[in-house]
Amino acid sequence: MENLDKFWKALTTLKPGVQASVHGDVTSQEDFDKVEWTIGEENAMAIITTTNPHSELTWDLVEAEMIRLQAEYDAQDYARKREAAYPLLKDFAEAYTEKEFGGDATKMDAYKIKYEKVRSDNPK
Image (cartoon, rainbow, N blue to C red; front, side):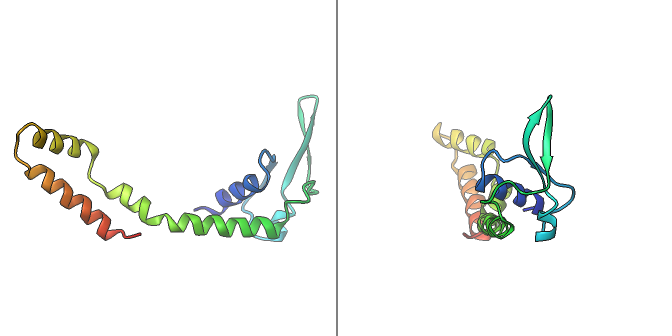
């Protein structure tokens, strides 16, 4: 998961609806202190400040949430790999249809073998 994606997800998880902008990556307190926070609107223009108006959004809390999000993302690595490697659904439909309508079960057996190989190659 990209760091900037983690930052935005952490920010909006901790404070839904928060509006801010950054220039570059946010990987430290120093970067966090440069975040531009939108605090309102006047004459159809955003009012922006670099002083964090959200006491519940500290760098320590955002960083901890980023770490939690990365761990959650990493824990699903096997699922992403499986999804990319599974045989196509159209192959299943073809094999199932052939088997159900009195055809040979060879295609279904081959499909099951491919499916189980993906699962064994990418364990939870």
